[in-house]
Image 1 (cartoon, each protein chain N blue to C red):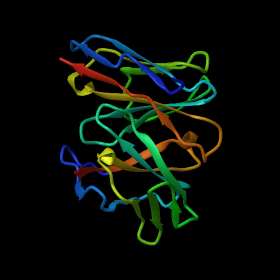
Image 2: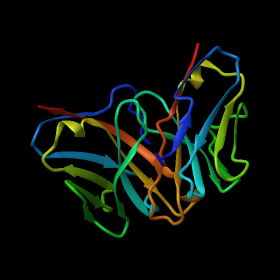
Image 3: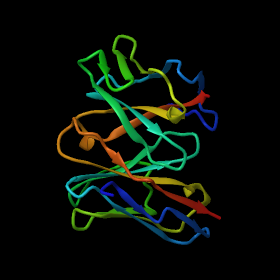
Image 4: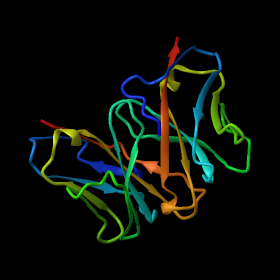
Amino acid sequence: DTGVSQNPRHKITKRGQNVTFRCDPISEHNRLYWYRQTLGQGPEFLTYFQNEAQLEKSRLLSDRFSAERPKGSFSTLEIQRTEQGDSAMYLCASRGQGISTEAFFGQGTRLTVV
Amino acid sequence: GESVGLHLPTLSVQEGDNSIINCAYSNSASDYFIWYKQESGKGPQFIIDIRSNMDKRQGQRVTVLLNKTVKHLSLQIAATQPGDSAVYFCAEKANTGGFKTIFGAGTRLFVKA
């Protein structure tokens, strides 16, 4: 399977704990995006990387959230001091060069904060 | 995108009928408009897109119509099948912010066998 891979698929954590999610994009894709999706809503943009550079962050990305893409390949999204409101599906997508290319999404990581 | 809470607009169609899913957008500067399909427990899957300088594009069993005058986008699915049951999102992307995709409201499609 050469699609976008996300791990873990599910994560249950206690409030206040830190969690980290991983995304492996399609190998030749230089653009990588993180989204958050809550029940009944469309995915909301969080942040975007071009190669290893984080070029845009949404206001939704509070200072408890940090994303990295150290070598321009896989990316991690960390949430510190999780809150119940962080419970959501976290989706990763990647895209190749040019505006006409489509974004491919992973299956997501479902986070539940208890 | 517009918030629809837990109550997504729902479209219920009989298997074999045609489906039309509608969407209103707000950003006139978008370069592409896109439809995604999302099945339960999965990430969104690209269906079809249309460039902003076009008004119609056809794919396999799907047609997207773009009306820029009233900022309206529609997805037509011909001969709807049970496998088409999913939530459909309209989306847009512009030549800014790394061509990020911005999602609009979703519609849940139920196909009755």
